[in-house]
Length: 445
Ligand SMILES: Cc1ncc(COP(=O)(O)O)c(C=O)c1O
Image (cartoon, rainbow, N blue to C red):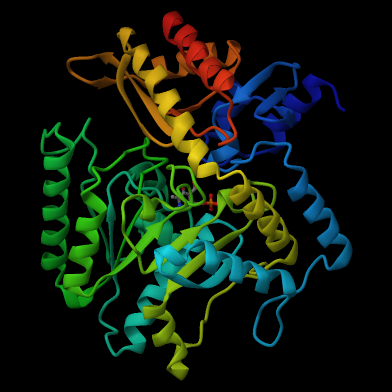
């Protein structure tokens, strides 16, 4: 391997990082990760940490899942690529569509369309939603509504429904016809409402008012994450998503559940929608589908969509990717989902999520800790400079992040939030080590 200075210098000179300022990456070089095993990663200095980020919300099975690695190697040998565009397909893609239909049958999902990742999945779902209405003679239904603070990837459609100005402002103007309503975020919301159940009702009323304001016959879909991830792990009250389903139904609006993070167990259920007892019309998946070992995503659709698309010749799907149904990705996903089911990782997410949350609640003794929240194995600490005023303190969060890393745990520093989404195979001892390292980190700030 090249020496440390060479890699750091070349990174600064040649590599631009997603969601980062190039100048900042030169001034404060990123950590160069060179190896991983189990739930641990090692950087260029040989410093080993528990990866409490789980890659980027995706490495649900940790870094040593032999069946996925073997499946990738076998598929590369047998058939490294063939397309699934009109006229051809491949066996791995067919098998995966069957597996997903079986796994997500309780969510009402029956059809799969493959993509290369989450942003692809979101943009495909938005397009399919518009096309569904058009086929049914309701071509005026073109608008999308989403939650403020929601994150739906980086393509134009996803960026346009994103609810964080940071990801939108440099690329304006966004797609016309995208509107946002407040997220059910008890710690910070425009209603000053701390009670999650009352807040859910206020947010539902705001959604319905927005649909009425836009005129329902112009609204194609509402898109939401069942638990908001990148926006800071915002957990809605259990009444929220059923309320959303009801409002969508009453106004003929499709419900898209963006399950790029919540799919495959992270919340403690197979899907976030199932966690809240709701069946969406379209579901976007990616990330943990291959535990991050291969770029892969999918959009799932229910029979309501399938009947419309399959029953009319104008239902030709005019979108897709060279790598839709990539056989290596599909083989990786098949092996990953077999392991995901064998280990029943959703049960582990629930058990370890409970353990992690109770450990994190114990850190409230630190004045810098404004809020602790989570569901399953996705959680966040919000760092403040003044607890009463709830003043967010991103710089302090950065210092805590560095001290926690030194103490042996990688968390994700995002503004004033420290976010965790560790592999779902986390042991009790590893769970406790995360809390201990954060305790050290918080003490130092
Ligand atoms: C909910 C959600 N949707 C979409 C995306 C975009 O996925 P990708 O980065 O794979 O394009 C993400 C990424 O974090 C996500 O969290």
